[in-house]
Figure 1 (cartoon, each protein chain N blue to C red):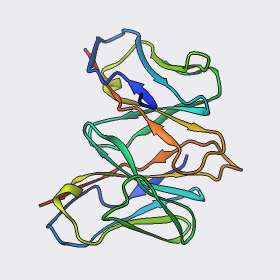
Figure 2 (cartoon, each protein chain N blue to C red):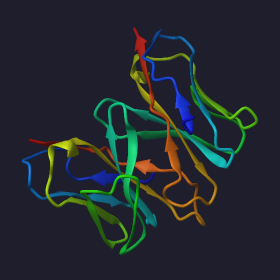
Figure 3 (cartoon, chains in turn blue, green):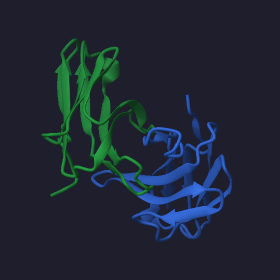
Length: 115
Length: 113
């Protein structure tokens, strides 16, 4: 089974701090995604990456950046955390469309609180 | 009209009941239909997915897709308290690019002992 690992389950940060959320997948998937999940708003796509060093903006990229230096690792960066970025952050991966089903496998989530 | 509609619940049933969870959608291009289970403060776990129309069964879980009605269902037989969670439906189009996953808001299910 694909395993998507988010290293930090719970984080508490202060406004203005730089925050790194790390995600690693172990099944050689080409595509990786970052979502945030908020009550009443559901899942919203922040960024996705379809290859190493490649990234594309999702629906709500403002205030976030990403890094994908290695195929298995996709990092979400909050350059200057704000209270409205308090949320559950979910990383997901998917195989290339040529080799696998167009379904997502999620990590356990990182719950970020910004004070 | 939203792309995916799902009754948010909450839905409470007694242990052993058959549970029916449903989503409707508007985009006829969707080909993959997924059901995720999400426990509180955890990430969504893929329960099962169906490609195109038809039924798929896995243990106590059955997924049905009716593309003509744009309606998908997840049935849980002999429901257990451990099934208490939020169930998300999700859809994507075949060969779609990264942004084309659409999620329902989730139905919160409680199975009472």
